[in-house]
Amino acid sequence: MNHSADVLVIGAGVTGAAIAYGLTKKNKKVVLIDAPPNPIDRSSRANMGLIWCQSKALGNRPYAEWNFESSKLFPELIPEIEELTGIDTMYKQCGGIIPTVGEADYDRRANYLKALDEEAKKFGATKDYPGEMYSRSQLEAHYPGVTFGKEVTGGTWCPEDGHIEPLQLMFALRLAMKRNGGTFLPHCAALDIARNGDSYTVHTSTGTIECERLVITAGLGSKQLANQFGINVPIYANKSQLFLTERIPNLLPTPLLGITRTDGGTVMVGFEHEYMGNNTELVPERLQHVANWAHTIWPAIAKLRVIRCWTGLRVWPKDGFPIYDAIPNHKNAFIFNAHSGVTLAAVQAKHLPEFILGGKLPKNAQGFGLDRFPADA
Ligand SMILES: Cc1cc2nc3c(=O)[nH]c(=O)nc-3n(C[C@H](O)[C@H](O)[C@H](O)COP(=O)(O)OP(=O)(O)OC[C@H]3O[C@@H](n4cnc5c(N)ncnc54)[C@H](O)[C@@H]3O)c2cc1C
Image 1 (tube, rainbow, N blue to C red):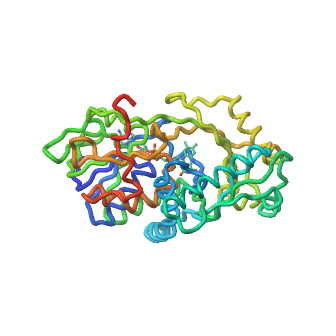
Image 2 (image 1 turned 60 degrees about the vertical axis):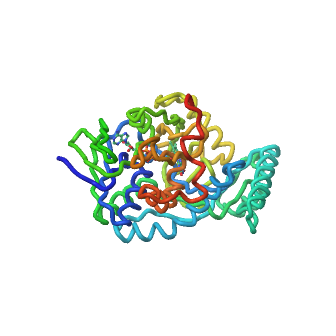
Image 3 (image 1 turned 90 degrees about the vertical axis):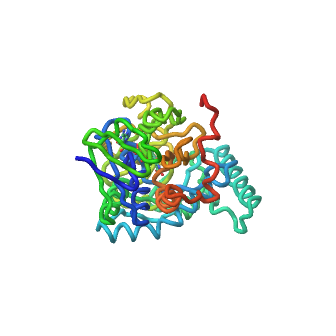
């Protein structure tokens, strides 16, 4: 079946769904399409659901602020989409903690936090950086039901971090977009993009879509679509292997980075970053490494049954920061790729639609253009 749209959004992971939702709030006729599921383009289905701002991006203050801004926007976004859809995203701003192992790790984290605070103040922050070191006894007081491993020295605490059920978030954004009058076409892959002046005809696996503006939010699949415009988008697959345990009572009210209890009671464990192309193979030795680390933090985790393991490929721009840009020589075609797409969902839903419709990116996002990469990146 054929469609027409003011804006066609290609890729309905959390990034595309958030942007499409934001566009419908601006009364645009939006079509959001998503290719049939495949093992590569499933970052939004494989993640931890952390809304994570702390200890990020020393040396790139705008990116750090962009994350904190997004965290602050969740209390605005979530009631809107939950009311429109009836979906409970299980959002909570519960803070987050990065546990430290050994004295050197504690000192390294403390120095990093101090440097972030100094940098924030250099950029005009009037308050202290929203994070602090927790001693081991503070950590124990925070998690009275957990006996930490003997090497655990404490951690970094940030009250602005949070957690959400990531699938519920993605489904709620897609449905909220539909409730606002948008069209969502699952199992619809963009195959070929043809330009007609300033608008586009996109041939998909299920029909043709005519659109005034085109937005590529296809995760790792964006690279291939961008090639059709003759540009190289420097994004790479960043692999992580995770496992999920049986349900437990709420011993972990705040996520520990790498060990997060879901609202359903299971515990999700994973932290690794590997660059292996689109390799999604589960490697038991790597999973064991992850499990050993978790055991160092919380020895009792060894008693829990593992009920599922999986691999997730992060969508990783070469320098780790988002890519928000119009495609060169195409004022109505855009590309958006970012790691931390869950954390950034709120800020992306709010501000990227304005940019797509002809406005400017907010100051904190203006450094995320394609021109920062060399041509052969
Ligand atoms: C293990 C892991 C843990 C993570 N933990 C967190 C976390 O705790 N917090 C956080 O903020 N972030 C986390 N992330 C990152 C976050 O999941 C991603 O940044 C986010 O999901 C990226 O979303 P996306 O929509 O850009 O990409 P994707 O989720 O990859 O979605 C892209 C979509 O585009 C579709 N597509 C591709 N090609 C086409 C085409 N030609 N036509 C139509 N559709 C197409 C695909 O089917 C897919 O649905 C994690 C990621 C991983 C892998």
